[in-house]
Length: 410
Image (cartoon, rainbow, N blue to C red):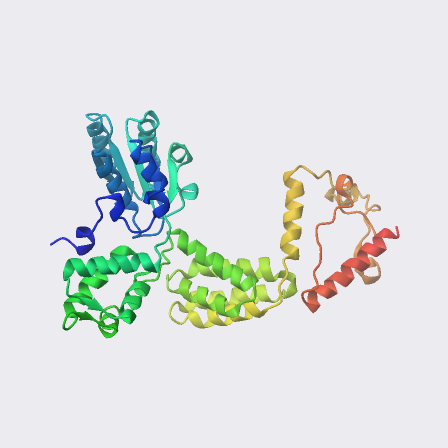
């Protein structure tokens, strides 16, 4: 028996739930189809929100023959066979699932056929194609992003599923909310949940208790191979940067559910130096120690050191002065704004006996002496701009300003 999700798959544009910007009354894809136009395109968005459905409906709408190709599992022979088949038709669509996984040799073989228009390609991916798809192929396609489904869209799916299964079925509001929450916006997951809970409900009434007993844990949309994973890492960093400890813990918990400690600990180490920096310089070693412990003990115990250090990071003073300083220096290098080292800084003086030009700072009070270190071309460059976000950096600022003042007296 076919799964309910397959049986309920839409066959017309009007049956598609959500994605009004693409297939609604004024949707761009609908407008193209109404004019019998079908360029190659890439559809991307989260799993289970309608990418494959839209691709199939497009072909049905225009009555164009098509074949499916999975870039993750199918080989070049399958692609060659599909392209040869397409030569028998005036228009032929190749639906490429997981196009971001397409190997280079297959991309190179497909490209001229897409370029000539002998094949109309509809690529499907969960990852932003501007980051993951070969630019040569992407440039020959329209790129459309599917939006996340809203609760009202998912409620339509629930009602449609119940009516298909049994018109007598009813559902509690609390149960409906639970199904929507645990589906994480995926239509397939939602329909499967309804189909299964309908089998155990009593008197054709789906209750919250039925749903909770059957679906004991929600689906966390945090697959490390998808954009949502990196969005969540970004949310964690921005929450720590913004000193919101509760949001920081929320995104940490979500990332922990993905079971990828390596990427998480790397990002935490970066945050320590990018966003906390000189406001609390002891944070870097503390984060490294906590991350090492987490990697050593693994999950689930890793949540303890990581939860502790994320609280500390979120509530710590923040400064990006060193981050900005090194980027300003790098910007000068990239622009070619540099020059030869001052002669007294070169190692050659240590070997030719001429050391008069270099003044050894430790021989002077405060271990400082006024001499030029930057190349002549940029001798007055200033990269570091201190902040007042902590007592430590305030102390650095005082010393920095004292040095600048002494230099100006020269």
